[in-house]
Image 1 (cartoon, rainbow, N blue to C red):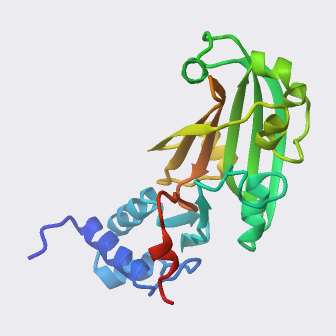
Image 2: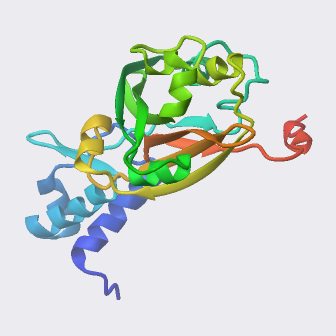
Image 3: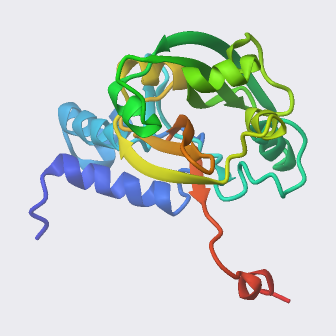
Length: 256
């Protein structure tokens, strides 16, 4: 005998059918009245089951259009190669990676002088509230919001590399620009976290209910001190990250 509440039984059955492809991405679920008949349940019970799937990020609801299974065309980012200057790429790593994946990149961009937030200042080893340049990108893949990227550069670095504070993108990428000026990033420290989005993040990334964000914080170092801190905020349902560490020749030979 199933002791699960009825609305959970409804959600569990529909979740299984989404997972096995009965209802593929982009398809519409049966109407509430059809689900009432199928499960012998009240309208409120069916709605509670559907609301649970909405909160899990599996389906979306539209006024007058019912419920639709979310489409998940995932973009895979190789975080090891993203800024490795030994790999052949032209300009910005984001444009290169998205284009190489057969997708279409697009971004909006702004530059501003700001005060370094406390957590950023700690990573950059400067005083909280001290001046920093923020270079902020709102990035898209195939016109779908993909990420926001906020990179902070300490004021001392901007004095040596004035293009960091100029409006507009740096065509060759900031890492290459700094390297050309003798400020080489020789290492970085990554932090990965997940949480539910803030209202502003949900607006910028068009995130529906139940979808978390993935936060990737990368602090870049020259030989003697940190030179920048980048916080990239991804839609958790559309992105997957991977790293390459060590000798992967065995992986490269798979299937040969």
